[in-house]
Image (cartoon, rainbow, N blue to C red; front, side, top):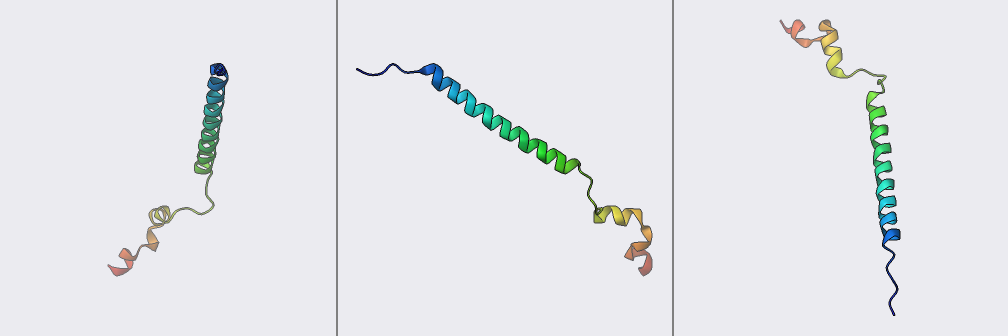
Length: 62
């Protein structure tokens, strides 16, 4: 005789796995957000050229 299926256990396991996956994704998103919002020590090259017009090669050529 076959065993009766335990659907509630299977459903709870699926929900647990889904919650675990969701928590991992949320943690990864939070890490990425913190890394993105964290100010960098060195400014990018584009902001240096815009902030200091004396460093441009165009003025020395003209």
